[in-house]
Image 1 (spheres, rainbow, N blue to C red):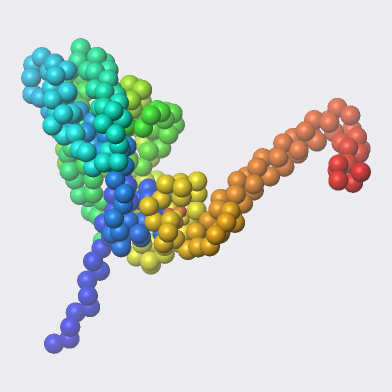
Image 2: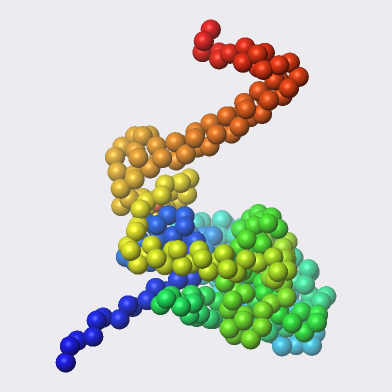
Length: 303
Ligand code: SF4
């Protein structure tokens, strides 16, 4: 009997994986294909402790809002020292106190209208066809006033993003699909909750582009299958754990290829902006003073 061809093992993606690939395909390979270790960071440890505390608070099935102590207790229980290993005790305390302040503000904002979450950290794995699976977990699935679903992702960045950024969020589009799969209906609204500034940015389901998200996921899956892992240098390279291994940073001095590409990109964008403005100004001068005057201004290099 002939041996069947090996089955395509499929591509497993998530929001973070797609996002990483879109930022830099080689970083994706180092992180998810080669599974190289990364350096723990205070931001990551801090963010996970905050997430754990919020999960504990929103998961309480109580008729009255749980007290702020539930948040504090969970923060204490889930505090992970890994990212703070290099820090002095005093510095760690600054991070810890900041976490308590953020949680206290969250309590202040949401306790008056507290409704226990339908689910927190809800795991899902979606089959989107073509042997592509998308997995992830939703931070907070809320019950809306009309009995529907609302989806919230907690963010621990220092700054909030705009409404437009939220509407075009790949992550929220994936969660919209997941809600359809898990609960048989779509959310009424989705939101990114920027817990540090205490700002929840909410958009209606109708503003989310699920088709566009699926196209992005499929495009990344196709590139991963074809093993296209080209380095894409950007200012983020300064924080990349794998710079020592990256061919774009092979060499010494300020003109290693990675740095040259970042600067080249910046200068080209600036040139495009300048050229657009020059054309605009030429139109104004030509309209009021005539084409000849506009052309007569000449080029300073001609002097
Ligand atoms: S150093 Fe930059 S280009 Fe190289 S893998 Fe890291 S992010 Fe990508």
